[in-house]
Amino acid sequence: MKTLVICSGGLDSVTLAHKVAAEQSLTRLVSFDYGQRHRKELDSARACAVRLGVPHDIVDISPVGRLLTGSALTSGEAVPEGHYAEDTMRVTVVPNRNAIMLTIAFGVAAAGQAEAVAAAVHGGDHFIYPDCRPDFVNAFEAMQRHALEGLARIALYTPFVRQGKADIVGEGARLGVPFAETWSCYQGGERHCGRCGTCVERREAFHLAAVNDPTLYEDPDYWIGACREHQAKQPS
Amino acid sequence: MKTLVICSGGLDSVTLAHKVAAEQSLTRLVSFDYGQRHRKELDSARACAVRLGVPHDIVDISPVGRLLTGSALTSGEAVPEGHYAEDTMRVTVVPNRNAIMLTIAFGVAAAGQAEAVAAAVHGGDHFIYPDCRPDFVNAFEAMQRHALEGLARIALYTPFVRQGKADIVGEGARLGVPFAETWSCYQGGERHCGRCGTCVERREAFHLAAVNDPTLYEDPDYWIGACREHQAKQPS
View 1 (cartoon, rainbow over the protein chains, first blue to last red):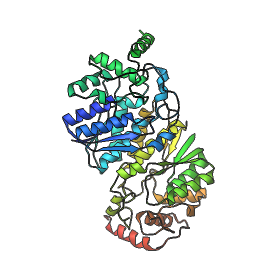
View 2: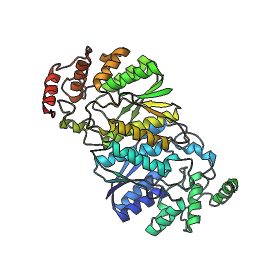
View 3: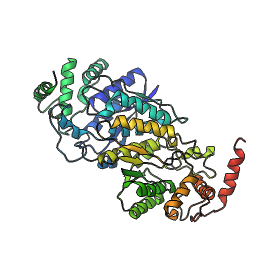
View 4: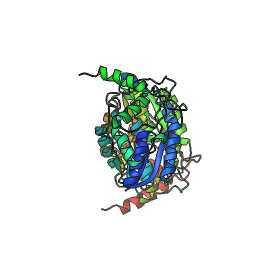
């Protein structure tokens, strides 16, 4: 099945690209530039496309990103530190981002005769991201069946939707994904900061998966306290 | 209900903007620049926003348009002439265009605390556009409920979805829409060409609605033959 992978350059979507390349016919990677603070992720996506020998499109939707203000990912707000599942992470929500990227990817797939779009949405404890949940994925696929009826039949492949990030790390390790060549950090420093939500989540996922983390962090031990603090707040 | 209207500057969406302004709280117009051959439509959308006294965003998604190749609206292909419902019009289909514009509009609405997005999708004889049908509209709204769950509750308002273009002309006439300040033609000439699918459809709609058409056409009588030819091909 000819499959296009939406690849941000992060750990999840790079692992997905390797998984699709191993399982079926990977035809192309598509990344989105929505006015991120830095381009480290996009550089990592490009390296992945080169490694897997497929074309790579970076779709510039930064004018859209500018309209979707109020998010720390695209605006001037400070990136919050701590565990991903905390209320403070709500500022990292770009409203409707997954739906926007998916509809564009489906258009690209239809134009290029691909049969599936793969996306690395996953659950974990991301309850604050409604567009990462199975109900959203099912409703999205139903919508696309209607939108492209008679023009194209394109599946939505989200193998990680019921998995946590630790499962993805485990899968990536089996597939031989070069994790050091993926980028998760919200900051665009020389190394991963180790303190933002996605760094904490990344480091925790390697720990839970019992996989060696090759990432260089500025603050390699911050995650332990952040995770403990988060766990202490959970209802027992 | 605070409502954002997707306005291309064509007859349908300008009529919709006037309808929303008359019925509820029109808060903003959003247009999309997807690399159209000309900007006449966008100029007409801007004039509509000025007339109705609301802000106007033109979202540049031309990098997306370039990827969705194979359409006469964005590529170098010749614009076909004749009746809209003919097979030749298939080249005017930009795959997934409505879904892409709608997801972006829902993101803008969520970021700006609007309560509804209005779009001028309509049926008529546009069977070649699956993303103009009621089933698509219902599936899209369901998808958005999941995508924005807990973040925003935004309705999709498509009052024309079960109507033909003649009904829209009738509605516009009742609302006093200045039709001469709307643009339908696929070509970007001084006047409407009168020969492309959307010119033929526009002229026919005024005829069917028994409303005077103030549009200046280069070829004002071409539509009659195109419509007769189309009718002759219909199963009796």
